[in-house]
Length: 590
Image (cartoon, rainbow, N blue to C red; front, side, top):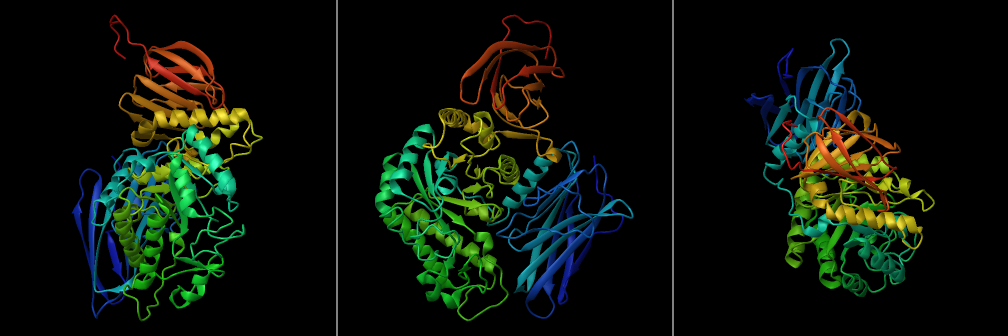
């Protein structure tokens, strides 16, 4: 057991004008809960609160947090904090051993205000100086929050998952209900069409990909403007451009006739400089220009009413099934309060906007789909959104893998979607397949043109989607196992009941931690030899390539779980192992 050794006591420091204290509520089993409270001395004021302690830096090789997992570096004590807020990440920070064990995971119950966590190495003593820094921008008279410190010697993803469930237990953080359609593959127009949306071409892709296995169409940016220029300069009016999809109701009906849901992209609150809304709402914008557009200030009740009316009208008049609400994390916080605002905090106003919008949208359509994108994926945002998508990473299977797996770590049962996958149509099919196999444990979104794909690419996509849908319960709802975080996850698997599915991304080794009778492995690497450890007994073996063509059938045997089974398989191959039940007992227990 790795326990906290305090070389100095816990310290709590409030900003001037506040008194603060804390109580250690529990400290058994390797988890310590600390309750903090502060009260203003002379009337309400903005508050900053810093809680700190020391921790031995023993067997810590890497760090993880919801938005900074690409940098696994152990932070120095002068390094920057891992920041979170209502619209950015979550207040969790995990220190991890080289074999993926938890050494110190810190979480805070405040998922709305700005929280910074830093476990910084002191060069003089090889200790971690640990800080949780909370900034409440709006004036408050009193404040309470809890800190959870977990030093159990357990897999770090279990520590992160427990911290997530702990945060979900607080009022207002209950995850949104998930409609069935949120867990089914999407076809997206973004990388395949960008702004060049032409109804007959989009519908042709819908027909193809519906048959291939996609159950929803997500029309991304560009549908609201006559030109194809990039940027947000034409957002805000949200009228269907006649030279794009034409009459939106007619187009939505055509998509529905194919058996697909229809989801539409909106930049939440943004009004572009070329829109009529820009001048109309000029005095109710947050004073910041972002990508040739400004966000409306949600602290005005009329702004929230306007946005909710825009969205509900789209559902009632056009028949939408859902929304991709983009750029929520680009709405800046502001300390300036003006007449007419009914909310001081921008974060409070965003949450009120989304809560009220979700209530009205569900009255129109109880199973409304709401997609949020990294990094606004924390517990508070998940009480509104029921799909979470990887950040943009076009044609980048490695980043898509890290993004989706990181979301899986702390997003509970909310479905995680891949960034829309795309690839070069000139790539060998087994290399193009990496774009899909790297997001195996998320809901795939596809954004390629079937009319441009060679025949083997078409077979690969259909084979993957068929496989994914057949096994989606295991892939999305199973017990996850991660190996090699420090090496960007060499191997990942998910187990549900007597089936488990794993993907070998590097290092050749598939480690079956808990044996099941059925094991399916994806060779998502360029190695053509895999070593499987953890099985015992006789197994039938069937290998198919990434297009679904059979490669070989045989049987394999492992005398003990610590032995390796060597399997030669093509790049991007599917390897299915089914245990052969012995008719007579052998006297050996595996």
